[in-house]
Length: 239
Image (cartoon, rainbow, N blue to C red; front, side, top):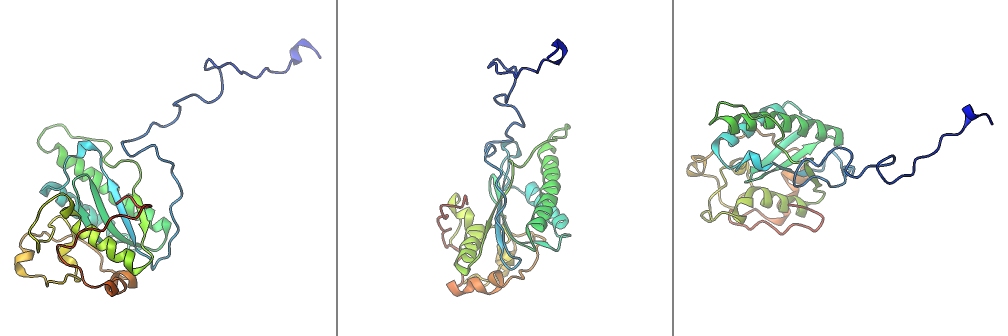
């Protein structure tokens, strides 16, 4: 073998001369980042989903009028995607709950991406309002979480959780409805909606439910009391 044809030597040094480097690649994007990006659970079009979107600390407390308006306007953008429909929603301090119907995983991804992009721009605008400098950058922490609701009990539990989640950290009157939610659009309360209830609400742009689980199926467990405590989450869920 001639000197010019010597085989290349494989680098085996531990001093960063080759191989994978610790910490290489895209850095985690937030407190809830760094988890394996597993494929989303498959579901059928007649099965609703509970979606949770968490925000970064810089977004501040989401339960205030400018953010409510931002969510309302972003829902208009999401509403253009008929194959991914937001049926119920509630705004919590650092996350947003949604009950969604989607034709398939691709439709869910498109619809949620459109909603997040539109909402992130509007939240940045709202956060920047007191100052002259416009905030830009990340609003949501990594990916949203989605949970398939494939039976009447799961759907009813999710409805109670989404619409009554504020009772976990606030102390509202027993028959009060959360003004930062779609509670006014819900027709399954034990107590009928009154004009007094509506006075505290700015309506959200939502789709009417189409799946049987969200229209009638959950009702087998009975109507929901306004002060019903949100159920403890299943182990596999992060509600």
